[in-house]
Length: 82
Image 1 (tube, rainbow, N blue to C red):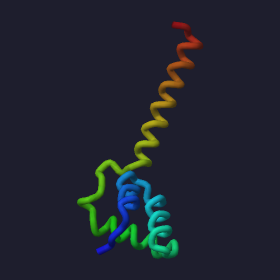
Image 2: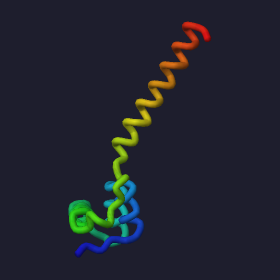
Image 3: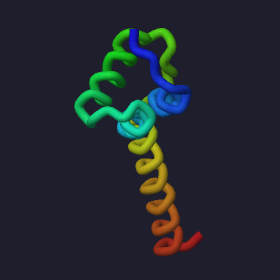
């Protein structure tokens, strides 16, 4: 069983795996490879404890799409009038 700090688990739940690895390295004094193994082990051993919303890439893609849509509407209105 892999025990991680609350900060590392919170980072994992927010989809911030690299941040979790940094916490583990700092708090446990291990190297990059070992910290990544510990985080990966925690994720594989505790799928029920992880947030189902941990998908930052999907969130970024959706936000980018909305930004483009809004900018397109603004440009269309400015070119075609109201």
